[in-house]
Amino acid sequence: MSNRQFPGPHDVEPIKGTEGWERMYPYQYPFTRDDPERAAYEKGMFWFYDGLHYPEPMYPFDMIWDEAWYLALSQFNTRIFSIPPVYGVDHRIINGYVYITPVAVKDPKEVEKRVGHFIERAGYYYQNWDALVDKWEVKIKATISGIENVKVDPLPELEDMSVVVEGLGESKGYKLLKAYDDIIDLGIRCWQYHFEFLNLGYAAYVTFMDYCQKQFPDIPLQSVTQMVSGIDVLMYRPDEELKNLARLAVELDMANVVCAHDSFAPAQAAMSTTNSGRKWLDALEKARYPWFNVSSGTGWYHHDRSWNDDLDLPFSSIRMYVEQLIAGQSIERPTEQVAKERDRITAEYRALLPDADAVEAYDQLLQTARTVFPYVENHLFYVEHWFHSVFWNKIREVGAIMKDHGFIADIEDVWFLKRAEIKEALWDLVTAWATGVKPRGPKVWPTEIAWRKGVMDKFRQWKPPPALGVPPDVIQEPFTVVLWGITNDSLKAWSKAREATNLTDIKQFTGFAASPGTVEGKARVCRLASEIRDLQAGEILVAPTTSPTWAPAFSKIKACVTDVGGIMCHAAIVCREYGMPAVVGTGHATSILKTGQLIRVNGTTGEITVLD
Image: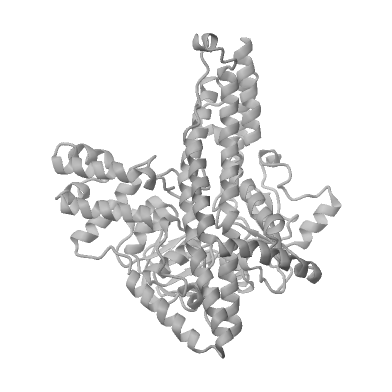
């Protein structure tokens, strides 16, 4: 592979007009030029753009989750479970986009040394998985309850008399500082729990995959993934609630009311006038908590509002399901068919094993992979969706107080500050309040935020390279392959696409074969979850990535293509559950394809062909 296929980490040209952008992010994140030792390390590593999590540039405050998983994933790999072949994942940022690199354990003696620790520590978790997951659920629910119960109170002109008569000894100014600290602490703690099981979940899956590839050198990766499909997980529950509401609308003769409105408010008004309508509204209200705490995106950005924030989002999906039911179409996931195919593939490969020892190892590794699989999906609901949805709104409450005191012009401006800068601003705010003087912040932050908004606009116009540096001869770090879809072949395909003068001239390209089968149909390019309402039955969804909010789309489409992701990404997993082809990690599908184009998707080989 040519050394010139991707720019070096220090060779990316700065964007004119963004000079000084580095101050928007933690100081350790930008690539380094003035530290020879660090620069040499960075030059020697291969960095890839984390478009799976960040399809757009990072707001300064939103970096909190990147910092959280930077710590959490790495600590469990390196310091807690001692995963033998890889330490943690290092992070950098350039022009607002996050790049990451797995830090491999290169010394064979160190790998061997780590094996014993891993067997002992990971073995304990695998042997006690269900009991530990039950304990985890208690912890994560307590953390969510904690964030829900944080009170962010405005500062009074004069404290209530109760502060005096009850001898409280604390002011609202102190409590505002503490509330902000509690919100941030709960966020970081939530992400500690996020990775308690996740690395082990992927490790079990990758270990089974590796065993299958050694026993059956020609086995397609999607055949391995199919052996762990057809398992019900919590992440399907929000979508099932929407289906139940659609069924109830039909049952109560409310289908015509649902279909007659494009948004929830007028439908709600119409339904509130009848007993059947009120019964349906009561059922919706019951389903909202917790199941509507689902982000409209990945949950990683503050603007990924939840269903509870915007009821038009779930209502649009309910309407889609009602229309399908009226048309006599099924809205069920083909679970029996998927399970039957899973069992067929599992038995066929099992029968090919050479002896009883191989069969025993196969059965044990497969059982472990199936045991851990639900957590790999279920944690998403608790963390990225339920917790994040509440968290973002708590920070908005802090932003409202900053706006009232003139620190920011709009509540949504709070996202242009780093979390440490918000804490500094709050100290300025409460001490000025306490003292009865004017704070400094209103003269500082509005000007800085206006500049940062301009920088972010320029970042959005920039196309980040898919990778930086020289790729290794063989990419074999398992998480990089299964989650991000980064392989030597995918990098070659991305690089070839970057060389094209016009991406729309490309008539054939490849990605990761994530779910088998071949279909032809019209493409529907959807960059946002809100756009899936435009999907027509039988179209092929083309998206940057998908999340649970996209779930209703999968009952209408016949295949899915994404820019980012590997065989364990959301789109790949859901397509296997629906038994439809998927090609993920294409790098540029949303730029190459246009809505309405006739395309062929081969989920067995990973090829996508433009037919018109």
